[in-house]
Image 1 (cartoon, rainbow, N blue to C red):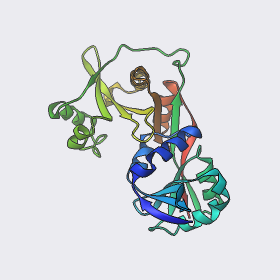
Image 2: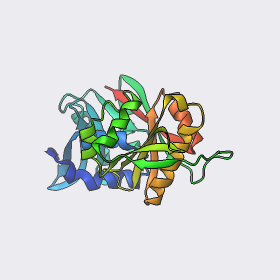
Image 3: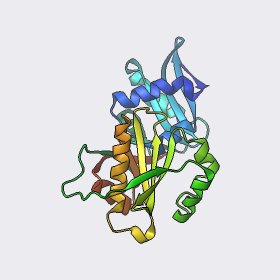
Image 4: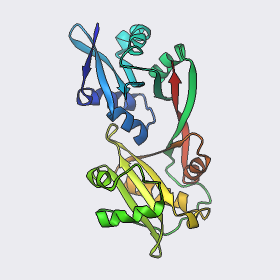
Length: 259
């Protein structure tokens, strides 16, 4: 049994199948970490029997072994912790296999995020607003994002336009007035999902717009045959409240284990 470094493309189908088979809730934040990780395969007698990935040298982002090799999980995981410069692991609470190995031996645990899925119907009493979603497609369109302050600071306009096949930004209007922005990120690892998010202009907050933007984005995503996901930082209580008001619920957390 030995380990080889490989490409994401070689592991892509295994990663997607593992997440779907085990019904693990993830979103675009998790996907980005997977896509930017270094990838490895575990090989026995010429056959791939597992994989793992490491993000920016320090963070384990995935680990899997075929059922007939699971008894070797603990010893292999200890080896993985000595690859690159590993200090921690980022894991969805739905990933029983990886989280079990993290729990065996860790120094510190940090709560990172909520991962949410959406109910089919909006909550009882939901008051729908008639909002219009207009996709931003050009450099000129993207100038509008400056109105959101530093919310899009980590997303240069050139990158947004380059990533348009899976990353979409919409301006949200009500009676031709700008209410905020909606974001849709189509899954690149899990092809059947799309992650949604929003920004509400400061003067429009506390008026029910956040949940309405999310609800409109949810309907858009579902009309494309995709399953809707949302995520927010664990301590961002306002974002969590907005998601729940739009019909989302979170039974999954993203945790970081330090070794």
